Length: 48
Image 1 (tube, rainbow, N blue to C red):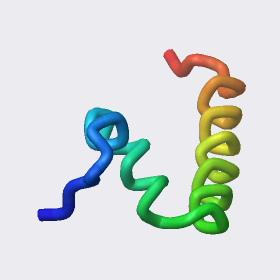
Image 2 (spheres, rainbow, N blue to C red):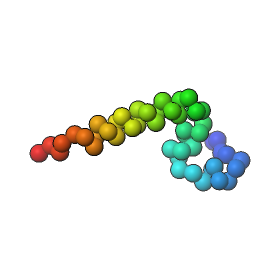
Image 3 (cartoon, rainbow, N blue to C red):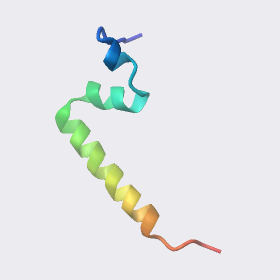
């Protein structure tokens, strides 16, 4: 099991720790896709 030596980093939520581990380039790509997904979900009219 991987743990951070810094307690402040170790106490972060799992998603934040994953972004830290994947590096700045990959984290930026994931954040961009998440923002696109959020925009698509919030822009869609509710289905009835």
